[in-house]
Image 1 (cartoon, rainbow, N blue to C red):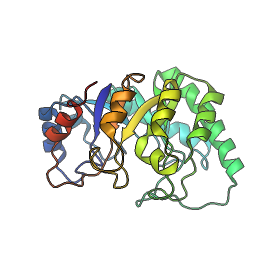
Image 2 (tube, rainbow, N blue to C red):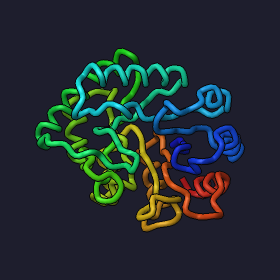
Image 3 (cartoon, rainbow, N blue to C red):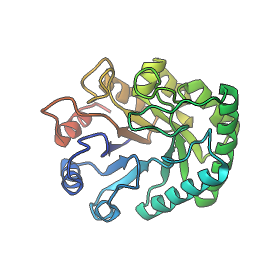
Length: 256
């Protein structure tokens, strides 16, 4: 497995230049982020760190907007990915507000699902043509992302299976899916071939992996037997003693 740090959740107010230096000095090789529009690409490119993933659609909804608007944003995001030599981008079913919620709308769940399926089929063709992987993320609606449509792993799985493309997989966020459904380790073991990225944060605080109800050392050790892709640490710092070095040492203390 390869490990990446989300620079938008971990110390979001830290100076980007200093953050990248500290992350690299700690021993990490990869970063990820949410919206690319507020990022200094030159700093990132020259940091010596590689980008493993970022959000592809922050202004277009896969269940509300027309295909032209969605394709335009995804193509622009792919342009950025190529510039950063990043080979995957993350998709969300909805546009998130500042507090993480989604504005209510009057579409039925059936209509939303159909629109999502139709748009993903089109985006897969774009991804295939431009040689990039799309990873779509289910989120929790009980705590962090009220009204977000795609909050169920099995529905996401059915979408991926029905479209059946190597250019579309699931971003499995252990924090979100533990809140919604639990049974995370068995789910990953069973469906790991359809998972293209994994996010890590502990429950219930969405914080460091060693603080909370999940035994992440056990989870990651078992996970390493079936999954060799990226694990992205997308959490908010809770401990005053947290450092990038502490996280790096914690990861490498696991008996893989």
